[in-house]
Image 1 (cartoon, rainbow, N blue to C red):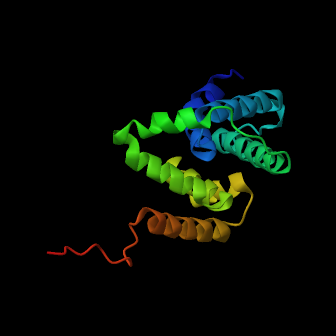
Image 2 (cartoon, rainbow, N blue to C red; image 1 turned 30 degrees about the vertical axis):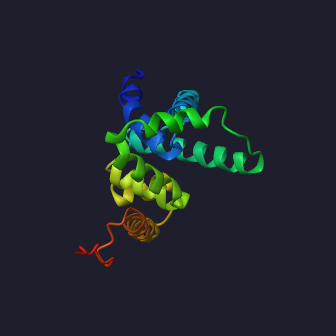
Amino acid sequence: MSDRPIEEQIPRLRRYARALTGDRNAADDLVQDTLERALSRFHLWRQGSDLRAWLFTIMHNIYVNQTRSRIRHPHEALDESAAEKLHASEPDWAELRDIDDALARLPGEQRAVLLLVGLEQFTYEEAARVLDIPLGTVMSRLSRGRERLRVMLGTDPRTPGLKVVK
């Protein structure tokens, strides 16, 4: 089989990796690790099954393992302040940055479900397979994650609006 079907998934993998990591370089590294693992274990993919879900499962597992490793062996980013200055100088991106920051503050399990269902358009069933969790867990994490995002972004319908004071 040619590599073309895998190649077609790279933009989606990059988008998901970027949303997971919050860093373009880390996302590229995650995609590369995912593709490397997928190609070296391609013989394990079942012909006729969902290639996209298989690749996202690999990526999710690598991300979880890397996150656990970073918790055990923390390190500091080399030049984080320069990246923050770059983002701060682009006011057109303020809303996206707020969403990105809010996503980063979500618990990892809620963020993963939100990104798969909301950004990558996976069905609940596909997300459950990728994350290896029950369907009900996907739905509850999605609901809790969406609610937390609404509160963090100030779009919670239960939050009273600002009053105009004269």
